Image (cartoon, rainbow over all chains, first blue to last red; front, side):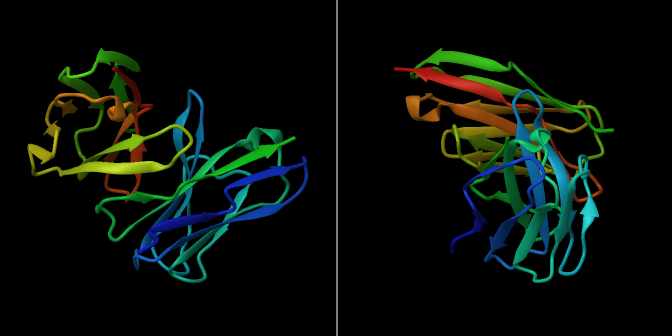
Length: 112
Length: 111
């Protein structure tokens, strides 16, 4: 069981470039989440999904899009990266709405 | 809107000491509360999950309590070790399937 994995681990982008972060889980979890973590701000929810084919906005969704075409994968896209999107991004999943939540190792993104 | 506060923001203790980390939340209508540990540059590792109907959960040297009516939880660490040094976060689950996180307590255990 790999749990929750994230690709890539590190990335540097120039302003205006686009990229996709991949989250994969092998626990057959229904719920998946994308967070960003910034110093002094804590963890903030970007988007989440309550099942295959569904997505919903979280606390800070602007500038990001997501897709959940397969149950095990949750993709986070940045269409036109901005320096304000420099952050550490974490993916998480859980089996049910109120079960234990498991996190991936994170992706450190720098936008110059 | 749910708000989660963790006090203190940082704590430094000598090895072997018992310690308590605090978490408070403003809306008592929660389904559960989860404590996590985060090591520098790493993801979050789940330590304990307390359902709203429970008063406490134990795992090894860790004991978490929950007082839903007063909006408080504590994480008790017995006989602390240098390997316990990390940031500890609490998070509460509301009716919208989302977790609200505190900003964490940075714990340093000195040998």
